[in-house]
Amino acid sequence: MPEQHPLVDGPVPHTAEPARSTRPGGARPGRNSALDGLRGLAIVLVVLGHAGSVLWPTLTAGEEGPYGIPVLRGLLGGGAVIIFFVVGAFIVALGLLREHERGGMDPARFLLRRLVRLGGQLVLLAVALVAVQLLDPTAPGTLQGLVQNLAHMLSFTLNLLPLDHAVPPRADVGHLWYLSVQQQCYLVLPLFILAFARRRALGALVLAALIVAVYVHRVEVTDERGWVLASILTTTRSDGLFWGVLLALVLPVLARVRRWSAPLAVGAAGVVACQLAIQELPPLSYLGPWSLVYQFFIGVLVVAIWLQERPSLVSRALAVHPLTWLGRNSLTIYFWHLPVFFVAARHLGDRPWWVGAAASVVVLGVLVVVLERLLEHPTRRLLAQHPLFRSQATRPAGGQG
Image (cartoon, rainbow, N blue to C red; front, side, top):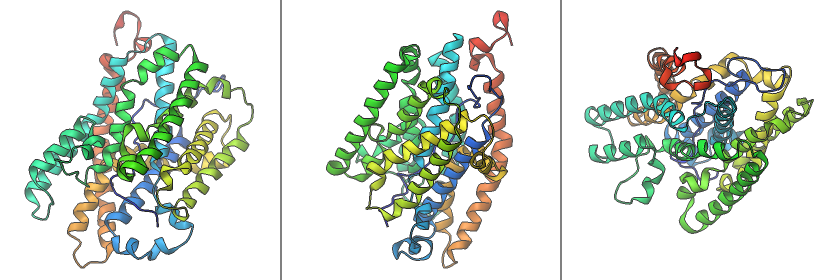
């Protein structure tokens, strides 16, 4: 089984504005259910992979249980974070391009929206982790070490923590390296859109060069500095984000294709094949060519879902309610699943692993329902209605509303 680490594999919670179709004559309001379902599938893969590293380590150590089943064990093999990189960047870039076309793009407002969107959950998570550290005698590490980790988490620099050997990384927050990579890239994304929105061909060439450069650098870092740094640094893992932005830039050209049923099937089959193959490949293949192939098929799938004129078998399968519910709530699930898993593992004792797994699922389910009602919905409403967060292009005349 390829080497795994709970700090270097996770999703991206979707934190962008609601997705809307941009196909000429085919615009439809609201979120794209099939893309929500794709995110839902990705969060399931991430949670299963992390559970295998925390809740049932005895199974992974001996290649027993599900890890002993060839091919199917790929569903527990990690790598699904790329889905979130590509999908999230694609949707965010489309939103920025729309705002630019309407003359209402404001980089400062874009960053403020993202801070508000993520900040509530992160602050609440920090408070909960401090409470556990103070009240749970089985909690590992020290309060000082936890606070240092939380400071990096809240400043979106957690992926840089391994460079500071004086601060030991915490496994229960290490999965949030993903947000660090994403937010650091999004600091410059609005500026990139401003520079290349009207020169999309040039922008696409720049992004293609960046994707190649990131891949080459990742291979070098893996060989020279180790797989952990290669898995979490912005300079080694941002190629998925660049791929998503590239797809958004060239979407008008891709929209000229009339039929997307065949590419949709190819993209779906390619994503499934890559995921199932990951455990059968040499260790650390997710940092090598496999990642580029996976990105390509994810991109084909995402664009085909976005541009298809009518639902297909694949998009209908992805749009089933359980998957779309998971996708819409992937932010909460992603933030909280590893902290919950580690608490459950510490208190599992001699009980079977499935007891901890079942308890974790119940706790996560309750957290999702409660936070959706008390935090997520009010936050989305605030971002949609308050003038401070709304694009100038969407405000009523006179700047009111």
